Image (cartoon, rainbow over all chains, first blue to last red; front, side, top):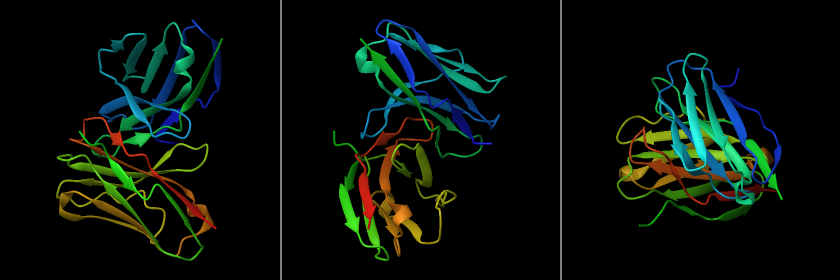
Length: 110
Length: 113
């Protein structure tokens, strides 16, 4: 089983739609969680950290479910500019390296 | 301030040659990571340096791959006797500590012919 798993998509949604992605992780002792965004042929960039109590940043909401070992990202009122690949990132417990999921591709159309 | 700098941005090499890829992290960042990304694929962890601790080399795919970090700053990833399957974008990232997010460089696109 992969350490971090994501649905590759693509998710094709119209502008204004709400879309959610999940990511599961295998190590129950994982400590830090992030969502990164990667545009085509560009380097990944941090979208948001994921906190235990859940957190929101504008149209983006991140949730952590430790019992079920998954994190989620909700995007409200999708914009064309949200089209990208969204990468789930986890720090396995006891280790410092950050493990990336393979990413979920989102395509927002007019 | 300056971000993570990688060089070269592109490298084309013949199969069997050695290559060196360089990463200059953000000043003061103690953590440095190397990842690689093949076309259409996710990021594959290669190696992680944290301060003066022994690096985590668990992601290096073979003994042809090695990396150094001199003086806790600049890092060099060396691939010996390159193979075509080594073709990928090699990404370097740094962070101020293990709980902080990563800042990526633009990557080195390696093509082995």
